[in-house]
Image (cartoon, rainbow, N blue to C red; front, side):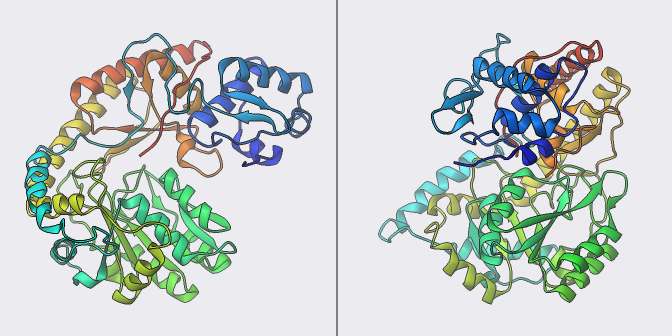
Length: 470
């Protein structure tokens, strides 16, 4: 059982007071931390006295907070273990808050490509020729590795099939690389904000995350990056240089060169997450893939471009590194499903068509979201975003967590800004995907506007729903 200390919980609770009674405000923030996954289900919370001493409140306040959360189904008392986090009803079941069908905008993702169904049917026929084998494939089908290598060659990065390892999505690739390249004494440079599940995979493998700021206005903090390499000599640096999630920024070519040079000096392995790299919306000239400027491992997938349900990703690295990853992989899984690889191979033949359709879909979605938000909530600051799947909106006030809870009461699931940090920061920000239909976007903005008005009038919220982030 994971135990969360009072000190760690204090860091997660950052700026939890919101003008309500102390126990109400504390309960609201603890509930959001659980819903967003920052307090894992099954984790033991600090003893009432310890948390009260750390927060500088009375024990009665903490006792009332815990009691409120137990009544709502977010805590349970376990003999010998104190207060343990849980979700209302069964884990993964959404509480009924009486608002009808829920609209989930916590995920920056698109529905399946129209070409997927036919590709799956053709792949099912091709599967017949593989049924006489074992079905275990820890490396990847040769034709799929060649198709992925060809995509890199077309982007200006010479690549051979033996430099490709096929994985079960990008998240699998991140976790595999973190386990292979790190031990428990190592640290890792990560961006802040960044993809939450990458934080989780890297934290599980190493000792410490070293955050470096990325903003919608200025991109990567170059001085901070250089200092992070020099002062911490990290084992890895996990970066998203192309349409960064969630800011949408693209790292300039000159900065790519500086980053890789700094990494080489310290013996750091740079991992570039390219899951958004080919989702340019505007006609802009993009830099080459990061590995074109120096040693770097690249991660890609079809999850953002084709469909999240097609669990196909890959790692591009030197052939010797790929061989080591294959040997390390078999300790946790025995390969990527053959049928999904066949589907992916078929779709890569039509990938330019798929990307053209996606880019047009995202252009319409982005322009519609920006226009509608400017009318509904003109006080927000919306960055210019030339690609990717979402906007990193600046709310102008430290209310992202409160707004997220209020939106849940309206029936809209969002991921609060702090979900993308390692320390509870970004209360002024909210990630808003533009990958949904215009009808769903209009519905979401209506709910969001009502929630914004409610918190502006000082109304408190008292319920939440489970939401994950992709």
